[in-house]
Image (cartoon, rainbow, N blue to C red; front, side, top):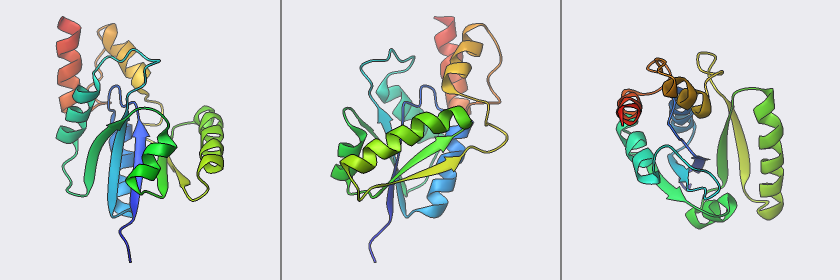
Length: 160
C-alpha cells in the first residue's frame, strides 16, 4: 500500500492557530502532508515566502510534515508531487462558495485529485490572516490567534 500524501496549500500570511489546527488534523488522517505556501504575484504579502515557511517549520515539528512553496496552478503542483488530495480549510459559509468553485475547477483539470474540506475548529473559526494583520497593525494583541513565532515576527514588523 502506498503512502497517502495530501497537500495543504495557502498563503499563510501569517500562519494562524486555525491553520495549525488543520495541519494537525491532516497529519492524523494522512501519512505525509505537504504545506504548500503560495507565492501569489497578485498579492503583496506581509511576510516573504521564506519567512512564512520558517514560521511553519518552527510552529509544527513533525517528520511527516514538509513545508514547500509553489507558484502557478495549484493542481499542477499537486500532480508534480504525486498527491491525490488537496486539503482546504473552511471557516464559514462564505469560504465554501469560493472553495467550491476552486474544487470543481481543479476536478475538471485533474479528475484524479480530490479536495477534502476540513472545518476550522470552533475556537478559531472567526480568525483569518487578514484580520490578524489588521488587528496587529492597529496595535491589538493577536497572541491568542497565532503561534508564538508569528506573534514575535508581527511585533518585530510593527516596530519597523
